[in-house]
Amino acid sequence: MVFQNRVEAGKQLATKLQNYKGIENLLVLAIPRGGVVVGKQLADFLGCPLEVIVTKKIPAPGNPELAVGAVGAVGEPVIDEELAARVGADEKYIKSQISNLKSQICQREKNFRHGKLPLDLKKKIVILTDDGVATGATMAAAVEIVRQQEPKKIIVAVPVIARDSLEKISALADEVIYLQAPELFFAVGQFYKEFPQIEDSEVIKILKLT
Image 1 (spheres, rainbow, N blue to C red):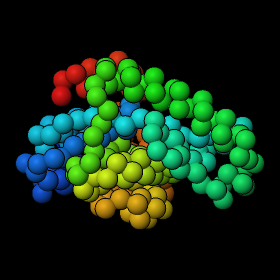
Image 2: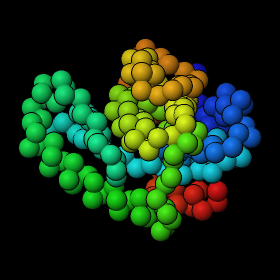
Image 3: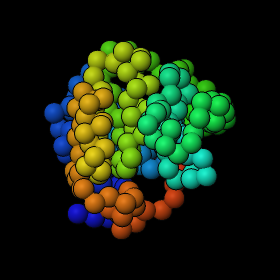
């Protein structure tokens, strides 16, 4: 199955969350930028708030597309120790990357959230979403960060997730809801006919409308 775009994927995914419609203390937490488009559809369908959680992948040395882990604004970073050792990402390199990424993340959260109070996720049912999950590193970091804030339940809901990442994320989240989990997975964009780059300005516009 190939989705027309993120809006269509979000609408299809929302129907699988029917059981959560109308539940109190429910929150959709989207990973920018593409995840916010999907998250808007989920929040509209469920009638609950939409917020963002900003995470960034820690790139392997000399290979910016390969993630050896991920980091968020708060909480402990998630590191794939085995992969990091294999690609030569030593402790000094990782600490330097984390420091740089944290400053970028804090700035982006400030831009997106426009001075809102810090998220309070305690005893909330949190639906974490993105437009797709490839390696799972960024989503794993998001789950770990949310978990530290003691929510009632963490549900990962995505249109498409790589089969090997599904196992990883299922071990971290309380529930994983998805439309596709293919074994052959090269990039999230292969599952969309239209997969444009989403700008920060569009994310801010969506968040203002919810």
